[in-house]
Length: 428
Length: 127
Image (tube, rainbow over all chains, first blue to last red; front, top):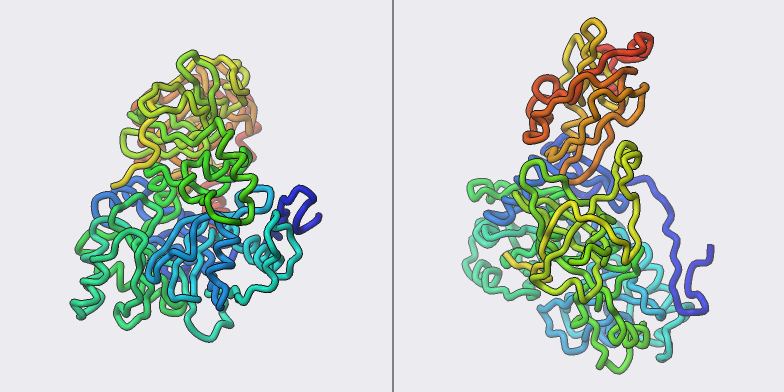
C-alpha cells in the first residue's frame, strides 16, 4: 500500500488498526455507567450513553450536558510562518483571524478530497491550536509531516518545506507544558455552571460575554482552561474547554458537581450524534468525504472554502466542484411517533415522482420526530419540499418479501414514510 | 444485569421459556441494556417455521437494528402484538410483557443446547 500522493494528487493513508485504549476520562465513565455502554470509537473506549440517548439529548436542549471530547486531536501550529502555512494547508482565511478567535475550515489534498474538517484557534500572532477529528488525527499528522518534507503534491503552489513552522501534538504525554484535551459543556445552563467554578466575577463576565467562535484563556477552579464558545450540538450557548489531561478528570467532576443542581448531566456519543444530526452538523465520513466523496460545497459549507484566496491545496479542484455540484446535503424532518420504524443510513430519499433522488447519510430520533441528513439531488432538496423515504430491507424475511436491499438513483420505489426538507441548519 | 431463573438462554442474549411443547421467546436484560431505547420491533409471521439461529425478528433502537435469532426450532404460534404500539415494553419488562413470540417447538433436541440461568450468568461474566 502506497502512503502519500498519487499521480492525480490524491493523498493516500492507510491507518493501522490498533487496540482501543481508555480515554483520559475512562475512570470517570466506569463510575457513571456500565461497561456494556462503553464502546471503541476512533481508537478510544468511549461512553455511548449514561442514562439514555433521549434523556441526554433533552438535557442539552433544556439545561446542559457534558461531553468527553478528549479523543479529539489537538495540534499546536507555531512559528514565524504559522499563519501562512495554515492559509496554504486549510481552506478558510487564516491571516485575518484575530487572536482569541476560532475559524472552521478543511484540510484537502491536491485532488480536492476532504482529509478532515477542523477548527483553528488563534492564540497569538504566531501561535495556533488546531482541533482535528479523532479518527483523522494519525492521517493529518502524517500529511502535515509529509507536506513539510516536501513529499506530497501541493497542486501548483510553492512547496511548504521552507516555511518556519512547527506542528506539535498538544496531547502528547511527553510534552512538558501546555498540554490540552477537549471537554465540551453544551446547553443553556453552561454559563451558570461554569460561573460556579470561579470566585472572580471578571472571569464570569469574560466567559459569558464570549461570542460564537471566540475564546478566552482563564483559570477555573485553579485549572488553566482555554474556553471557547464552540460546539457540536447546535446549542447557541455552549463551550469547549481545553485543559491539561491530568487535570481533566478533576475538571470533569467539578463541572458535574457544580451543574447537578442545574440539571447538567454527562452525555455519551449517542446524544452527541443525535444532537449534531438535529442541528444539521456534518460528521466526517458521513456528510463529508465518505463513500460519496462529499465536498464542503455539497455539505453546505462553501463559505468555509475561500476561492478568492491566492492559493491553497485543493483550490483548483474546489473551483470545479463549486461550479458543477448537483447533489447536496439536506436536513429532512420525519415523524417518529410510536410504531414508526426508524430510518437508517443508505435508505433512499424519493422525490415527488417516487424516484430515488438520494440517500440517507445519518439519522436520529428526537422525541416524536426523526431527522435525516441525506445526500440529495439539489432540485429535490429545496427547503419545504416533500420527500419520501423507502426502508431498505434489514432482515432476511424482508428480502424474501421482495424489499430492495439497495437503490440506484432514479429508481422508482414506493415511499414508506413521508417527510419534509427543512432548513439546512438549526440552532437551539 | 437481571437473569431470571427457570429460563433458557443463548449466547446472542435471547431467552426461551419452555412449557410443554411451547416456547416463549424474548431478549435478555443484557441485550435490551445494550440496545438502549427500543423504538421498533419487526415480529415474525404467525405460522412461519424457523430453525435454530435463523433470523426470527428485528429489534430496533434509535441507534441500531439488531436481529433476534431463533433459540429453539419451532413454528410461530403467536406474536406479542402489544409491541407494535409499545416497543419500549422490552426495555421495561424484557422477561415479562416484553416477550416477542411463542413458538410451537418442532425439534425438542434443540432445547438441549441452551444455557440455564447459572451458565448464562457465568457467560455474562466473561464478556
